[in-house]
Amino acid sequence: MLATIFGAVENAVLTFSDFIWGGTWGETRVLPFGPMALILLGIGAFYMIRLGARPLRRFVPAVAEVWQGRKGNGEPNAITPFQALATALSGQVGTGNIVGVATAITIGGPGAVFWMWVTAILGMALAFAESSLAIKYREIDENGRINGGPMYYIRKGLGKKWTWLAAIFCLGTMFSATATGGMIQANGITANISDVFRADFGLQVANSISVLGVSIDPLKAVIGLIICGLVFAVIIGGIKSIGKVAGSLVPSMAALYVLACVIILVLNIQHIPGAFAMIWEAADGARASRPTVTPNERVAAETPAPGSTKRRTA
Image (cartoon, rainbow, N blue to C red):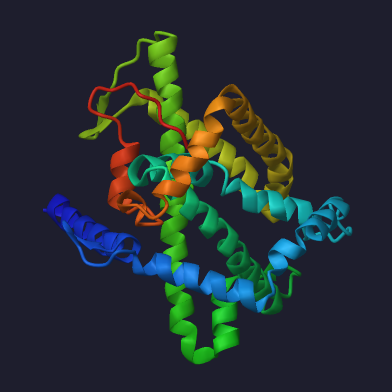
């Protein structure tokens, strides 16, 4: 009974999500683009023009400001600008840059790269506006802790009558953080590590055991518990602990990511001109007509075939 209910809810959510992001309803294409993609690109273009391309013009001074403030100002409950940047980047490199890009190219073809460029440039203005509003309408409680974000500038900027929208945003963020920020990342880590131990190291561990009638992979369960312990050790220390860990790990992670990209480009340098030509020619083609990937397509692309030991990246 519960499985039927959850299945119906999942199908309804995915159908609606496919429409707002991909413009499809079931198997029928209703719109050439997903409404949400058009809204985000349109708002990003508006802010880029309204701000006079400030995110592009002031990029170098912004980086210099962050670097100069990497040691902070000595406030006990604050993190440094560099740690704040590292914390933000920690949620971008991985699910977005690796899995997202690969999935978009697989489904949308080489022309999807062009739309990712456009989205990245316009998204800079949108992110700039979001950050500016968050700072303008943030609050400091009696303990000196800073609270801010969309839920605050929706309520304080638009007025109390929009509190319901702020509450909806909070709920949506909670579910998004749990799924994208927790489940997908943790699943990718456990799947990769378990595949390495089983396929490469020949570890002989049962694929599943029954616990209270539920089938569980013991190796993945152990890896998951280790991840939970590490995450708990970080977040229990509050924002200072999160900023410190992010400020230490993210630069190395980002450097390795950029280095891997450079190595791949150097090893395939003879194909770069042809790749640019393919991207440009396919930018307005049928397969690149959607500057986004629907959730159903992403799940399908990231799920290996039954019995496959293909590793997943996150």
